[in-house]
Length: 207
Length: 186
Image 1 (cartoon, each protein chain N blue to C red):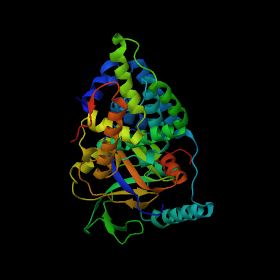
Image 2 (spheres, rainbow over the protein chains, first blue to last red):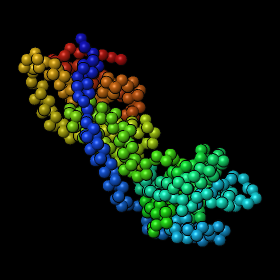
Image 3 (cartoon, rainbow over the protein chains, first blue to last red):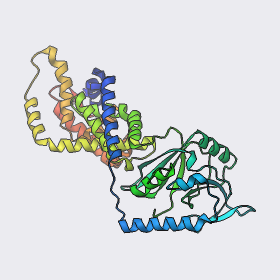
Image 4 (spheres, each protein chain N blue to C red):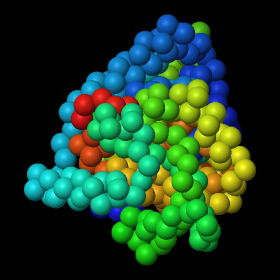
């Protein structure tokens, strides 16, 4: 008697067929990618009420006003809808460093005065789907000059924090495990509208 | 923003849009998915269609795709099996009629016997519920262990063994007129 495994194996269509042609694979890939691109281009719906969005925007503006007098400003940032900066940071105070609270947390970090990269160093920023419905992240790409500045600044800063500032607010302080290059993803609890505003603002376009 | 964002440095090759992410996902997994799909459906065109529907579903649910390679493959396999289950349920009435018609046919000559036997095997597989068929395919043809199958499909090893047992028994009964088979055990 024959084992089922052998019967199935002998009749396996993959043993008797060539499989899809390159053209078929290509067409299939095109259809899948086109569908994804179509979804990319569709305007998303946000669950956040308009009033809450306005309050968040007001809070961000208030934060900019509150911090602007204490921060060196780049001339290019005045044109940007969203001020994006990356600075090296430390966990311990030291002369010349400025203490800043991280977001709404209790953590305080101490920022170096030099700005590593700003809006000018961003080649592009894209809104990408996050890890939950109606939540979006921002994929940031630096241009060659920005990537080089980032690499140089972070290479000697491993194991220490780097601060990401949006509109003057320290929104994240990841600890460097390896030098940062040309790409980064800001994964937060953004609505599509928030993410689009930040992504568009980073490269100086109108929100 | 309700909570603090996290910034992750990523390789420069990271896809920037959902379309590019889907393209990367397709490039990484379409071959394995096609091979799996082909063993679940009657024709190559059906398999391509099933693979396409799986990736289209991935495009619509990109937020829930795991980032790890093995996890995203398992996720795609589960999506594919679920799509096939839905299709199978919808076509159940037609399928029963087809099976009854096919079951009444017999080889017209010895020269056709091998082809008919081969067709009979896959016709028999067609009669299995999709998840059971997927388990049979993964274990018997792809060589996955019971635990691996359970892990991919997100079910218990006991459930996998139960489906294997039922599937082998069903196949042995259906195929008995065409080929001598034994309901082999692990």
